[in-house]
Length: 497
Image (cartoon, rainbow, N blue to C red; front, side, top):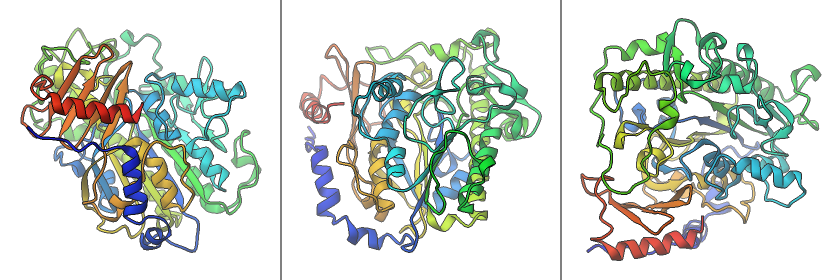
């Protein structure tokens, strides 16, 4: 029987910050420009599986994300804290474990509104240290970062004090709520059963909401590059004079979130592509976090079910892939703007997927489970003259690590309250070790190590999967490996998510 080493986050922090010698010595070696403050570009992509060419999936067209990966570090085993948008983004933006539901962000906002002291968010931390902070699109939970019936109420910011400007150009979709699930030419979801599950309409990128989000993001890059802002170029919620300041720009691309709509030109490549078989497509027989794919099933599916209809399953997968290529094109436009405005040599770029997405694995079409497919998502970090650019890392890491990493790359102090550890050692050397990743959904929790995934249910039931076997997450080994379960339980309790 294999015996695990019990690895605590405090040990990771000590190893990463002391044993490997972080601090000014490492920062002086990471080859970032020293003369100027370092900018940050954070690209958040909704429901993006690590199914890109840079992740070894050849049939996907993702040239722009692949180009970013070639200049940075691709984390092949990055795991989010929660398999749902709001809770995952809460962890990203606060550096803390939060509630397992999408309400975590709103609960934190209510605490601030009621005068309770809460740690600053990541954009607020950068803002307090002299950065202009801008968000465009879906960065926190709602596109535009506000509440209210149509998600456009300026008095209900999701992340109070975080953003100098938080923007969502709704265009024909009228408001952020309309843009979130919008299809071509301003079609807004009222009842999902009346909205098609997928669509491929003729037109340019602006016929879907992400085209407008990207155009605004490019505009913001130009403004941030100019070092000055005219009165008519900023929104009413901007405060202060940010001339000459470094920036923290976060851009949230909605696709490939449901419904799967993208301009027809992105679907063209996939019409004749042969897709590989769906891995382990059967519904689990034992107790798991399996669900009935309710978010997916509520759309108009023309009375077809991909779990039972292989031809329809292939259609769905191809339309999802078209959305990935559409999102990739938006990334390309933003990166081109960064280059054109002379910012590429002084900007850290992070591309992050807010969680994974099942395309039939375990007979699930969606997220919200604690299987690998729901929790593993893309993470790419790139900055000028990174060592061994383009080399991938197999280290297990998690979303909580992004906040301290960006602090160290920009030479800001790392807050004591953050729950993650800096990834700078892995950025310096792709062979450097990672650390176990913890995630949660409802009252269930899971821990992922190099070899195992353990899922602990609220009632004490345990799933244990060995990723060194071909069975992967289809054979529960908890009864056969009680020592492993005990050790993983200790590690999970030590994290206290």
